[in-house]
Image (cartoon, rainbow, N blue to C red; front, side):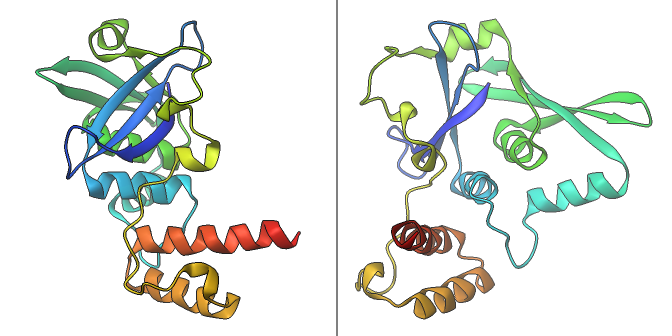
Length: 201
């Protein structure tokens, strides 16, 4: 499986949904999983390759694994009970395979950081998977690569559009937001900076 979308959950106003898609197979099924705002932000920060000023919890786990020579080999979503997904981290340490129980949202945040594969079982896909029309351009999970990883942005404190700020002002604001660990707004400003670079290239 791979992460194909990350967006606000329609069913739960205070949550987000990460959507996994089959890497191969036809029709390619989608597996939507509701996660919390913190975990959604942790996944988005890693996908967008934003470096926080201080390590987030999942960055800390990655650093610890590196220090004690533990390899995260894969993520397995191995069960679904009463609407709750269960997952495990499959790790290797000193040549021995270890399985660690994990919340699925945390497992996915780590998978992005370790660039490791994500797997699930057929019965999980049969119970919670969604089959979409192959060429449906309106399907949310078929969003463009940039849209796939974005968490809906919070409204900036200023009502002035980002397009009216200078490059220096945007860079200063980006640094300020990273220092404050306000990653959602930082991603928005970073996207504006990327947009201007593309327009000037």
